[in-house]
Image (cartoon, rainbow, N blue to C red; front, side):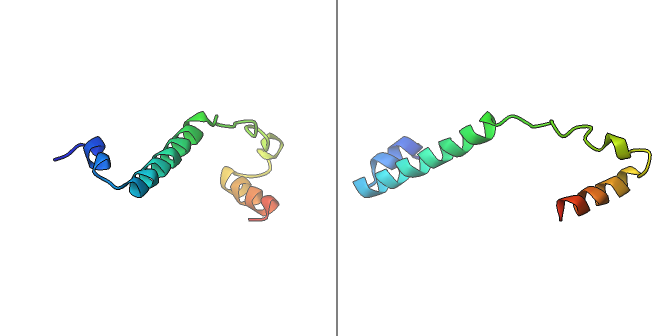
Length: 68
């Protein structure tokens, strides 16, 4: 079986350009996913309601408040 490099070399120029564009898109998608930090600034935001609601009720309330 041919390697990817060998297969790309056998392509006509217009398809080589298409492969290059595709690889760039994959690279951007990978970089974007890995470069994004997990936000946790919301943690504890509903603390004031923990004595009024169970966790399930709080989840439902949060969805109501967000409009979902």
